[in-house]
Image (tube, rainbow, N blue to C red; front, side, top):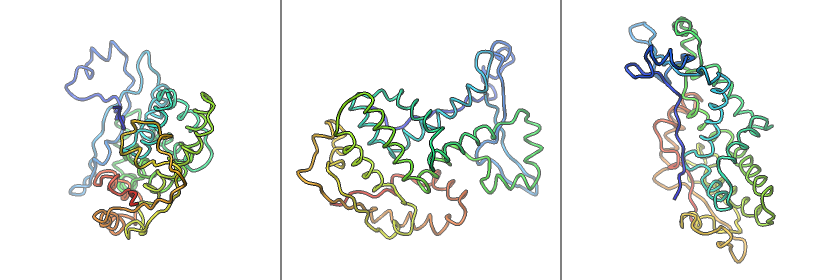
Length: 304
């Protein structure tokens, strides 16, 4: 039992709801900002149109800095519980008695200072989290009504669903860095709480397995079904098939085994379609992969 994904949403003031009343405003002293609803814009009969949502970023007991901290924390949650990308890591940590909430906290705090592509990407996410907010609806509408600024929406420079955008970036551009960071953070957490020499070997096998299934999946090589070879000391594949009931240590091979991973034959066309139709523009790629395709369907699977 357990869960693989956590979905959270920004506090929004929806028309017709109790929260969006004068009484609610007077009681809680809401601090409201405004942002473009992701992908809800267009140019119709030479008129630029877009939808704006009102979001809660503070109250009399909750500051804007609190909001920004939690939005960043939400980003870390989305990466950790992210459509089966790193499930094997989190299941392993749970088996070892690690409190996942405290792990997410340390993951988040360390990630903000992490050097390398994973840290750079996360800081870019945090920067966009702040930049998407407008104090005034009128200023937002005035800004994006200008054609040169509207083009920023069209080209994906701004106005995206940031969690979805950076999820796809992590897979398409920095997957190896995220795997290495997850491995390093998990190992540090375990070594601080336990004394066990097997952790590094077991976590290395998990990292290599995740890399084999998810590294460079949006590529010409994956569309052609090229294999990805790794050597494992533990049968991570069977451990996963058995729904992580027993410890990974129970799945140790008698000797190191070479495993081949390949994408399913019927899914090769999906990768080819993505590359042919959407790969010329990164913003388009991020949007279509996050909204039109089931990402795990692009993963490689062990074939021996």
